[in-house]
Structures are given as structure tokens and as C-alpha cells.
Length: 434
Ligand code: FDA
Ligand code: NAD
Image 1 (cartoon, helix red, strand yellow):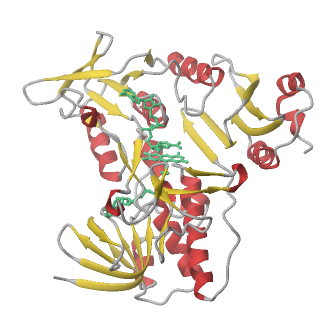
Image 2 (image 1 turned 90 degrees about the vertical axis):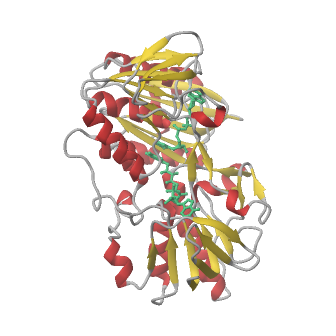
């Protein structure tokens, strides 16, 4: 049985793994000290590309174009970069057993990896409709999107089903991004979701009304207030229709499901403290087990600004938490400390010609400003969230780089609101001199 030992092991080869390894190199790493173990077959890449540029009908993004750390304007870490730095990239290797007490990881093919320090960066897995026992959910051409192999299968189906019909199940991030991507590929798209409006996790009804109107004008059909209850397939096992709970039947050549993710923490069950579905960490991403850190989607960390433990499933946090953990590891080795993580939540999305950003916390009362008419030639609008008389969150569609910087500053500084009517009437102008 092969056994290897490393000073540092990063378990997972996604966004946070890539940013962690760059930070290790920046702070000083000797050849042979670090391994990344990933079940994916490629070096860490910017996952957000998979639901955007990767699916473009022309000029599609392909590796090596979007390896980390290009997503934040940094240098691309090509596979040869890892070799040059003496970093072991252990790909196509799934860890199936972790024993934190003996600092041992075991792969599906029985390879053993021992470590002194472990960074858990396993991210999330998709929730599957078969998890809820939806009948027929294992038919061909029902797709989920998490890793590059999923995206490749979807690209092949888009090419095979030119001009066909797609049903998108779910009205969250994946639903909205994939609905647009398939439409751009000339596929007839219907979106189905249970809530009264899309992205209820973040959007207010006013924000959602804009995107739903915009999508409808693009020819996307939207069916709300119901869920997929089953799927029909033909004699080849290919999906042919989605049966909805309300009795309607929608024809489908392709189905894309985006009904949420689940942090991959099961390897560590009972070995480390969990909270809110993730692995509990401190402000340095240290878990309750010494020399074990958790970053990215799996970490439930203290969000200092709001004084509560949170888990965040977005790329900006994946990058920053990874960098913070590595800084903390390296500082601890020298008997030093670093500042506690002080994160300002930042989410964004891009579809069609649209692009929004959100900073802060979406709690409290809301004020919508600007032009959110989906038929306008240049719609531009935003929303403030106000709690205890202060602006705590800001959303902006079609903002310039400067304006996006401004809303980040507002969300961080939380200015007091003097006049709600003024916020509504003047929009960004009302906060431009904070
Ligand atoms: P990530 O999922 O990136 O990496 C986890 C890695 O661990 C994977 O390589 C996985 O294979 C590996 N792994 C897991 N278990 C393993 C095991 N047992 N053994 C070996 N390897 C294992 N966010 C955002 O802010 N803006 C955006 O536009 C997007 N867009 C977007 C599109 C799509 C399609 C997805 C799926 C997600 C996004 N996100 C996003 C979310 C963002 O990508 C996500 O939050 C980060 O990738 C999280 O980084 P992690 O490193 O935590 O997990
Ligand atoms: P999500 O949580 O954003 O949305 C899930 C949606 O599923 C809900 O809004 C709801 O409409 C729907 N839903 C739930 N149960 C359903 C059911 N039984 N039938 C039909 N619809 C149902 O999750 P997602 O869109 O699947 O995204 C997965 C992960 O990827 C998340 O972590 C997300 O943050 C991440 N992601 C982020 C971005 C981004 O930040 N731009 C883009 C893509 C993916």
C-alpha cells in the first residue's frame, strides 16, 4: 500500500485549494512539503466559469484559460507551475476515509496520505432530485453542474440537441445562470421553481420582478409555485418530459437541476465540531482539532461584522478564507498571529448583458431605487437593506467599477439613514459622499 507524508495537505482541488497554495508559495514553501489531493482530473480552476463562459456557443472558455488565480486578476497557476514549485498535485484521487487522530487520509484506491497540517477544502456537492426520491430522476440528459466533467456532459448535450427544449429545475444561482446560457445556445427554455419569485435567498420581489421580466422578454418561460414530481423517458432512457406536481407536463430534451448544494463534511463526522451544516472554525479557519483547518464552502466561521457564525458558498470567500488560513498557519509556525478574518459578504452574477453585485447583509427593510423596468434599453437599479436605521446591504445591477466599489464601502461602513425617501429618489447619489 503506497504511503506518502507531507507537511501540508490540502484536501480538495477547487477554488480555495488554488488560492491556498498560491499563498503558501508566497509565504515560503520548500519542494516536497505540500500536496493537493483532488478527485477532479485537472488542476484548480475558477469554478464560476463553468456556468458562464464555458457554455458560450462561440469563444467558450476552456482550460488552461481559467485556472486559478485569474478570477481575481492574478497569475494563472498552470499544472507545470505546481511541478516547478515542488508541489504534488494528486489528481483523480478521491479520499474516502479521514482519520484526524492519526493524521491519515485514505483514497478509494487505498493510497495513504499522512500530514502534519490539513486544510479541508472539499467544497459542496449538488443536492440531487433522487435524494428526495423524485421518480425517473436518473434518466439520461438530466444534468447537475458542479465540476468540469458535468459541464463537458452538458456541452455535449447542447450540441446533440440543437434547437431542442430544456427545462431548468430550480430558480437559484444555477437556475438563472443556466437558463440564460441555454437560451443563448438557441435552446427553448422553461424554468420551474417552487417559490413565488426567483432567488429568494437574496432577491426581494422587486429585484426578482426585473430578472423574471427580462428573461420572459428573452423568450424564457417561467413556471412558479411548483416542483418537478417525476420524469418520463424513452426506450433509450433519454428524458422526454418533466411532470410537475401541479399536474402540468413539460416536454424536455435536456433538464438542468440546480436545487442547492450541500457542504462535503461527511468524511469528518464525529471527529470535528460542526455548526450550521459546516465545520466550525475560528477567525483563522482553525477547526476544533489542532493542525486542521477548513476553508471555503465547508467552513462555518465567525462573521465579525455581524457577530455570528456563518457559512458562505461563494467564490470571493473561498479565495479569502484560503489565504487567511495559510497566513495563520505560517504565522503560527513563527509564534506570531495574524488579524482575525473580517469578511464583508460579496456575491455576484452575470447573465445575458446583465451583471449584478451585492455586498453586506440582506436583512431588514428594503428600498428599491433606479430603473428596474425590464423593457428599458439600459435598465439600472439597486436596493438598500436597512436595519436598525443603518444601511447594511446594497445590491446593484449594471453598476460601473467605481459604483460597485462605492456600494462595498457603504455596506462596510453602514451609514445611518436620515431619509428613506431620499434614498429611493436619489439612489447612489444619496451615499456618494460617505
Ligand atoms: P470547490 O467546490 O471549488 O472545490 C472542492 C474540491 O474538493 C473539488 O475539486 C472536489 O472535487 C474536491 N473534493 C471534494 N471531496 C473530495 C474528496 N473526498 N477527495 C478528493 N477531493 C475532493 N460563486 C460566486 O461567488 N460567483 C459565481 O459566479 C459562482 N459561480 C458558480 C458556478 C458554478 C457552476 C458553481 C458550482 C459554483 C459557483 N460559485 C460562484 C460558487 C463557488 O464556485 C464556490 O463557492 C467555490 O468554488 C467554493 O470553493 P471551495 O474550494 O470551497 O470548493
Ligand atoms: P441555490 O441555493 O442558489 O438555489 C436553489 C434553488 O432551488 C432555490 O432557490 C429553489 O428555487 C430551488 N428548489 C429547491 N428545491 C426545489 C425543488 N424540489 N424543485 C425545484 N426547485 C427547487 O442553489 P443552486 O442554484 O443549485 O447553486 C448551487 C451552489 O452553487 C450554491 O452554493 C451557489 O451559491 C453556488 N453558485 C453560485 C453562483 C454565484 O454566486 N453566482 C453561481 C452558480 C452556483
